[in-house]
Image (tube, rainbow, N blue to C red; front, side, top):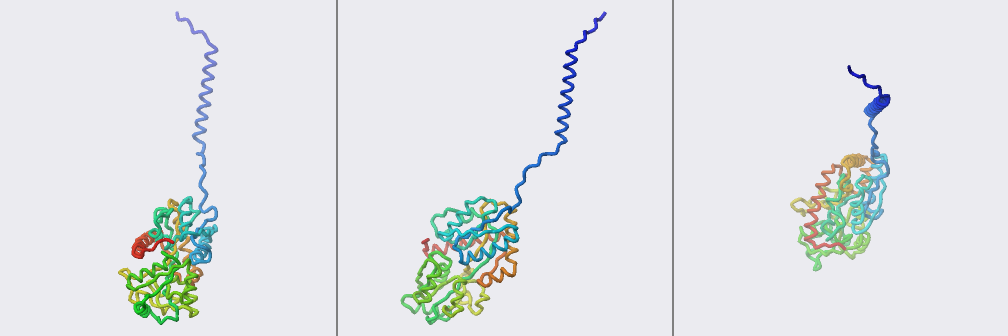
Length: 345
């Protein structure tokens, strides 16, 4: 006969406790499974604060004026102010280096110009890489140079200019705003094409160069249009050619150098140009938004009129187009700088 098991109250108590604990654990697991996933913090929509636009030149010059015109319009598109910050020095290298080292978050931009593509060959060492350290956004505008002479000289056109240079024992002199500037290298390109004896006289800026040109201390200058135009319109300087591929609407009777018989295989088209760039690594979505804002700004009639008054032609386009153009400019100016022997002052 089997002896019945003795009743153990402590075992029963442990069994009930275990059942209760397991039930609670199950309920907790079910609660976690049903709870919504935690909301991760999302980055603030760009731009959430004002954007800084660095200009490598002093206030009042063509680069600064163009930057401020574009900044105002882009600010309207972006819903945040675009504030111009003039960081001058070393032919714009100071400003370029500052932007190259800035965070790639879309809040620091740079007015990238022809000078940056020339500086790539002009300076033995730079504190930045003009290609690798920037993300192109788009071109802004181009401004031609004008070959101007002192009106007291017997020069009415490029043919007279060439004749005068060949008949003079000293050749002909041309001023510039500094060694390696686009004004200087325009003259060097013409010297290479014409074979003329030309004496380069560098100054520290366009203003003193123009002063000596007006006074007859130098014969000529391939000056930026905004600087030369007032003196041409006042009859104090004579414009005999323009360095762009097309004539300027402000000087319709002044032929291009190519029309005057001086063009390389690619034509003679030298213009100061201005673009917008950001530090390398800036998110593509931000670059796309900036490009759209820039092109929208350049389409505004008021802005186009203001640029036209400076002889500037708007150049809307894509980041890829600016990248390709800048690369071609670096290649072109490398050859001119090498042939001219130009060095940084």
